[in-house]
Length: 136
Length: 128
Image (cartoon, each protein chain N blue to C red):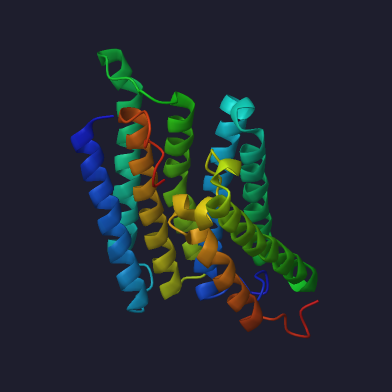
């Protein structure tokens, strides 16, 4: 068990699995978009790619041991929440900015609103699984 | 893709997913039934790979992006083994929930593949 961080245990493993699936989905989809039709919506597709990378980082940081990864997890999940809120609001107020869907458009509607709920659950889990003093 | 087969596949993935999530929340760690459900979902995905390779030769080709379709299908095929591996590192009731979540994700992915194969035009990307 010492191989695992205090975050990759119990229900945290379900959270990490959901993160990993979303990271895979968002990254794979944005690769298809960047490869096939980048010129149609460079901003939207760059944003999707960025979001995908943030989910990858969050997944790794949640699995990683120690205080550094714990801090990285907070940053990554914070960016996610900010991203889904800002892009979500902008896509409703100014839909013309986002003619092409991104992961975060309309608060992640295209992904069953998981992008909106997941960072909140992630933060709850981070608060509940603070690194123990002996974990360096 | 073959519509009835895809429908069966989505139904099996949803069924397996719900079964695993419910059994996990009922505090069951992975047993033969749960791993069997994941194996069945994987088997149907491999059958789908064969269908997707063979079907275009019979005039049944994807109407949408073939690249996008294959990215979904390959990702879906990889999911059950990865989920089972991740689940069995620490074998608890949450392992069962992880397998269930993966099956539900596969159901969504197969639905998306179906849309890419059959449905084009406005609204094709609505929802997912």
